[in-house]
Structure formats: structure tokens, C-alpha cells
Length: 376
Ligand code: SF4
Image (cartoon, rainbow, N blue to C red):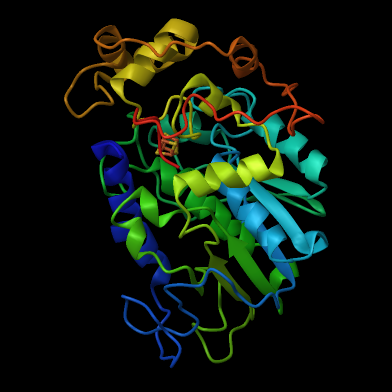
């Protein structure tokens, strides 16, 4: 069962984000099985696909569904040598620690080393905090890590703007700006800014699941990605065939955990602490009990958010309660996993990625949880 907060995020993704990405992709196909108007290359169900791609980009958040998506890609025989992983740094890479788990970036690096698949970071300069503190100023650059090094994409044409408030717990991308500014836009520019994708067939892999909400139940499993140009124009200046594939869209949560167990991948730390999702640690959609848990075990993280609520004179919650007030009215989760708790506050990830020989896989405390703990 999902909380109404998560359902709201999903509704927003489905009604605002995905339709926006689909704009301009109009034509016909005799193979389409979809609830949307017919479009070329769109398949409502595509659990198995042809593997005739030059490269697969797997969006790697460090959460369970992104691992399951990567495993499925490998299991169906896509060559590991053609896969790369992308991870968006929510806090940027300039020193902010406001939102994300301390270890998550290094965790992705260590996972990349363990499986032998390259990982590239991309981010909005100064991250969530920098975007939130825009004050009559322009948007910061996007920074994309590529095989040749970093590229910085300035945004001189962006409008001068003021935020000085948290994203709203709302459906609109204009007001709940974090997902678009820190992830969707950054990923799209990662595709469109790199000439190495021109003339190539690229598979863009993400880990959404239909079971998560009624809205996600209507997602197409295979469709052209927003960065595709070949199906938008007859003779594009930069021809790119980019397909977006959701290989675990049809999975249940049970299948996801089974997939991680089969891989002998140790459950990621947030789930071991009791979080049902691994997204920003201080996600604006966190429930009262998660704020209470953050207050108990990570008080400096709660204080940083509370200080900004005070500075902006606006609570994140639409009900008007501050994160401190919400933490005070709920019981924190009881965290038994002291090893995971120690790791949670350290930037360097030092725990095993995979189980050692003879070790038994354990379902983490947050599996099948109902506490709202962020967007996936
Ligand atoms: S996890 Fe939460 S706070 Fe972080 S970008 Fe997503 S919606 Fe925003």
C-alpha cells in the first residue's frame, strides 16, 4: 500500500512529466499496444526486447528498482561492455549536504567498481540548495561527466528568478521543481550534449514499476525517449535513436527483492534503516515518522531543514506543520542495524556490496514498508 503523498508524486510524473517528454512524437505503427494515441516505437508491454542497441544508459539511483532494472538487462543477455550507469547528484558537487544520503554517491562508485560497469555523474551546479536559494538570479549550469571528462553547460538564456522556498508537495513541476531541475533536465541534457550518441541506437533504462501506483500502471514499457530525434523529424540535424525502456515495470516489490537476493546484493542502507524507498534522505514527501527518525538519529539533518523553513517562514508540509513539529508528534523507527546506522552518516561507503561466500541474504527492515519516505 502506498501513501497518498507517493501517489501524488506518481500522478504528477504521469500527468505532467511524461506527457511533456512525449511532445512531438506523433505518427503511427501497426504493432502498438498502448493506452495513449498511436506513436512509432511505443509498446505498452515490452518485458523482452530486441537487443540491437549500441549502448544502454542505466539510470542508477542506488535504490532497489534501479538495481533490479540493471540485473534484468544483464540477465536477458545485453553485453555488459555496452552498458553505462548515470547517477544524478541531488546536492550537486560543490559542498551542499542538505538533501541526500551522505554515502549514496560513493555507494554508486563502489557498486560500479564491483560490477565492472562505468558510472557517470551529472548534476545541477550547487544542487538542490543552490536552486532553492536563487534570489533574483539565473539558473546554475548543468555539469555532465563524460568519458572524455566534465562538460559544463551554462544557461545564459535562462530567466532571472527567485525561489527562496522548498519545492511544494504539489503536482506541478513549476512548484515541485526538484525532480525536473535536478534529475529530468539533467538526464535529458546528458543525452543531447554528447555527440557520441549521434548516429547511435541508445537504450535509456529506468526502474519504474506499475505496482507503485495506478498512474504508473499506465506507463508504456518501451517508447522513444525525449532525446530521440529520428522519430521527431524526417531529417534531423543530429540523428539519434533513443528508446526509453522500463524493464521491471511489470515487477512486484517481491520480485524486485527476489532479484536482489538472487544477485546476492546486500540491501541498500536506507532500506536497512527502515526506509521503504531510497531517495533523498530529507525528501519533501517524507512522512511524520521519517522526520521523527531523522530527528532522533540525524538531528543535524532535521535542523538544517527546520532552519530553512524558519528562514522562508513557510513549512514544507501543506498542512503548515514544520518538520520539527511533525517529528515531535510521531514515534521514530527503531533502528536495530547498527552497522547500517554507522554507514548512514559517512560519505565513504565501506560496507560490502555483495554478500560474501556462505552469507545468507536478508530482507531489510524497510521492505514492504508503508512509511512515506520520498519519491523513487
Ligand atoms: S527525492 Fe524528494 S526531495 Fe529529492 S528530488 Fe525527489 S521529490 Fe525532490
